[in-house]
Length: 431
Image (cartoon, rainbow, N blue to C red; front, side, top):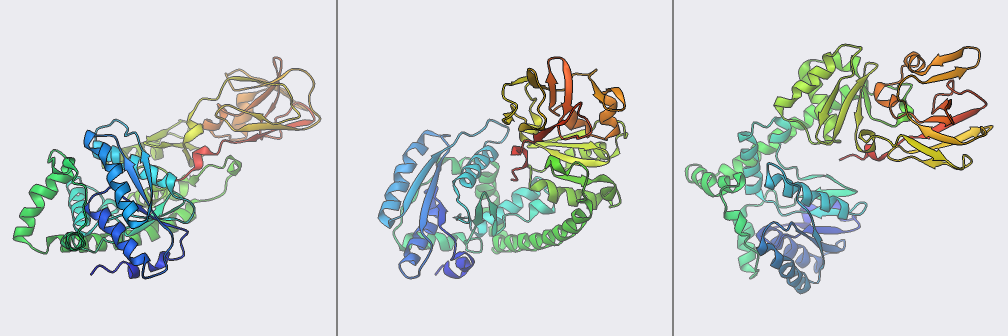
């Protein structure tokens, strides 16, 4: 007997439970268990989500199969079609597309339930060991983790595959047999069909032992995460450019840590923002950290860039990596002006007269400062220690050819007005 209720008690007050329904054995059993449980206990509303990857012709029939199952169980079904990005790993691309769709489909506080079981956990650990994963990767699949506005929960992780199949057979359930699951060209399938049977023949408790090891590794990673949070709390200092709204860290604080603690803290910090680099690419961190103070080092990662400026490191993504349009006419300076890929600007004080427009640095700009005369803009920005990555996208207010003000720097204005820049915010959406 598979007891789901005790495993799901922490989420009984969630707005809804959503089952990731592939139509395969595991998700079919999970949905059936929940439907049966809903007749005995008060549960949140249950619905199912089927992701159609469009990777094989056979998959076109699966939504109809899932719909019949859901109709029989009285469960609402949503089918989502996704595009799998081309890349070296089709498995990885499909997984990213699938979980990206799940994250968007979840409403605030909702729970996504997936059907991975104990053997899936063991296979994941073995797969990651063979790829040379670090401790964070070897923790394998957590029983729960944040996803989108909700949370992902795997209630069957400690249940054996044989028990899942026995339940399906006992209740006469029909499920989809994905032909690609037999293709041993895929690494996971090779482990499942070629390696694991041999392991189980020699060590019958291999799956249970590997799953238990994954739990121990996950616990060890939890301790390292505590250390990372302590180190990051010290490195998350304030700066005069907090108005940028960008995540940043004090590099001097990080340098005080051992190289291993630096990597540990950064892994924790970056994991919320991007896919983590493998061991070979961590040289990018060392190059960023050790570059000359007058350089403009950056470390390019999958979902953004880490920049260094004024002994801080800054995370940039989204619109912060896009080049803003070089010239925008401001027809009505009494109203805010939306900038292409660069937030928006407003004016306060006595509005300047004449045709106004917003532009960006090209080099050689000069600004008239009261009491100081004409000054080179580059020198002024150096005096204020404006981060290099900000300078190319700081909105500049012009009347014709005359530079009138620089956004968000009150001292850099030629008259009784101030240019206010509401910076782009899309870069700060966390993973």
